[in-house]
Length: 398
Image (cartoon, rainbow, N blue to C red; front, side):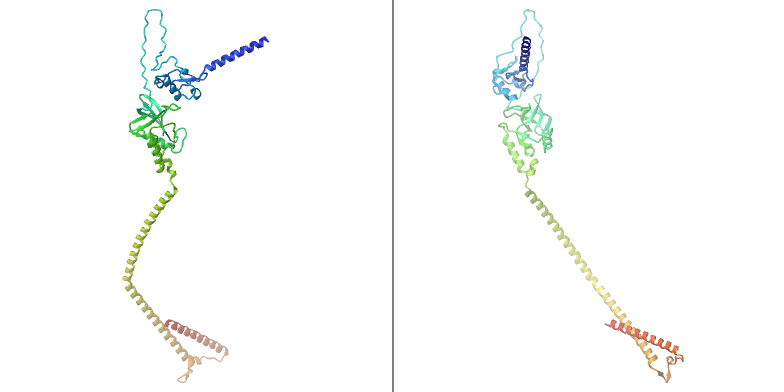
């Protein structure tokens, strides 16, 4: 029983020591001032003061800077100056100083080692303007600038352009190209404004001027700003909102899709009507040219018409003469044949002598039949020829 009690007490002691060590531990992530909160008692430990922390002359100013630049909202709620541990550092307006090192009891002097003075860039202050040079352009609303020998990653105040680095949003590339080219046009000036110098990511917040022109206003007028981040009152906020209204009214950049379709239809209708008018004018000119050509051809035909009519009349007269001559020839031939038939068959005796055909008879019956058949065929052939010739001559006369 005593053994079990000893083991229990020992484990409790080990657990208490572990809890004590974890309570004293902290994440170690420092903020813009060079310190952090200790989660056990929400004390603020200022390990290595940055230029921003050195701008605080009193403890109250340091408290306000800690509240602005530290993301630990849990410890910042009930935070006051009594919970700040300067760890031997002093403020410029505080009478307390770092405790001096203990002097040796011996009076023998020691050689003093002089350390070179470290020059640090002066800290930026709210509501001031600073000359800057471009180091790197990131996207439409972020860039790195060198101010007084120190590089600041700067977030442009108030505007929010589409992403083009990690995410590729619509018009993100256009916004990035616009800003990067704009920053190379001349002298750059940064102006701090608002309630804080830095955002929660440690980026400097500033208005950006190039040759005296506000970049945020120019990129907004181009229709490449999709939204605003409004966390307070800003100096040039009204100018940016007016630029946004102008971009939407004139359908620039990403707001071109807001243009009503009726306006597009009217413009296309006007273009089509203009094209139709041009086509009609061309048709009118072509018809005039065609009419002129037709009149020219008609005049030429009229000039040539007399000769053609003369030729036609001459040809008609010749054909008529040929028909008349042909018709008269056929009539004469038909009459001649008719006379021969009459003389050969109908007149039995000339000068009391019989014709040769009447003497052509035989005592045999067969030959008489053959001769009679020949006479009949000959007679009918001649009769058919005469009838055809008469009909032909009658038709030609009509």
